[in-house]
Image (tube, rainbow, N blue to C red):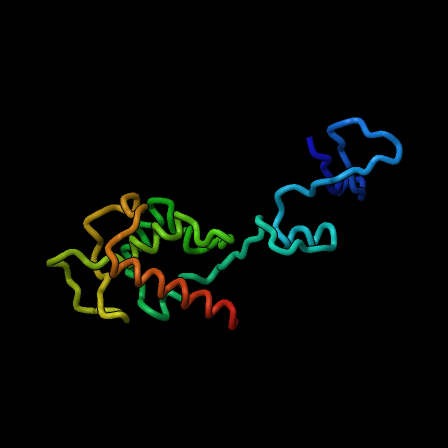
Length: 166
């Protein structure tokens, strides 16, 4: 068992809990737990290079999406009803990439309109997302057609570029 270190706010002190008995003079290794660099910096005053727990939280993905292709309000309402809208409002980006729910919500928003729907107002990129897809958001949890996946990639690249320049 590793030795854990934590900060106790009421006592204004760091606590070290050893999982084993140590002898005098024996080297002790501690673990700060699975924390991102923001937390490590705020709590302990350092950041870890190549921290596997480091994340970036993007709160403006919908704004960046709107710059490329306005989102259909009825699709946003459906995502909200199905509990997936949050995945576009607070997007946690890890070293592994974007979360599954964010990709699922984007697939639903960017799927082409079903044949025969009112697609008069085409967005940027040449396709419309007027009208609800024939499938619910829950079925968008795996890769869509190549065109939709390319749109998702363009939206995510655009969003990241905008975040970096902001």
